[in-house]
Image (tube, rainbow, N blue to C red; front, side):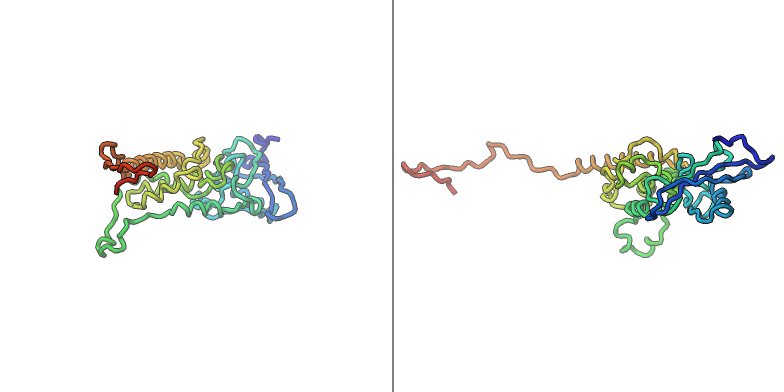
Length: 288
């Protein structure tokens, strides 16, 4: 049933919400509950959820915080697309039937609330902070307080990755995670590129090499679902491609700088071992 043209008065418009309901560990099977709501222009999905919770079902559970597309708490699936509820305008959607589900690739705690623990654990694994040079702690006090300058051009190289708000929309949209749960995911890898691409970061190359595997940069299918889902116009696939290129260069340098084994000596260079003629019935021994 499509209510796109149905209006209750001159200003409001009726929407039908089908909301996923389930509580982890409960005996009841997952279900969808239906709610009808008349909303005014400018109403977001998050505002509609507050109205449903306050007027129709106080038990409805969902996450929120800033309501301004900054915290990333209200990520969910809206009509099959991962996005932020606080940023999605109801009147901008092509239909008045709104299906709300939790983010994929994460276990459901209750209704639209998912367990973000795997997402944060993978994020911590990339060590998401700037690493100083080895020995900086032993440097003089003037060197420790010296400003680390970054030019506007250097900033622009990493700006899009800085804008990531860690909402996990890209994580939910990623098809590789459905096949490979241990994959770090686009958000963590994009953040890694944010730091290794920063001219002030001096982490050892071996730390970046930790993602040189199928659970890291090579697990990406490059289908750009993460780019489509990102509410902040971050392109995680670009960051993953940059990390791949960085790792290829790292491996090539290893081949060039790796100590080469000594060449095998030629037969003419080997010392000649003299043999003594042994009496009949005895074995000749090599000269010492």
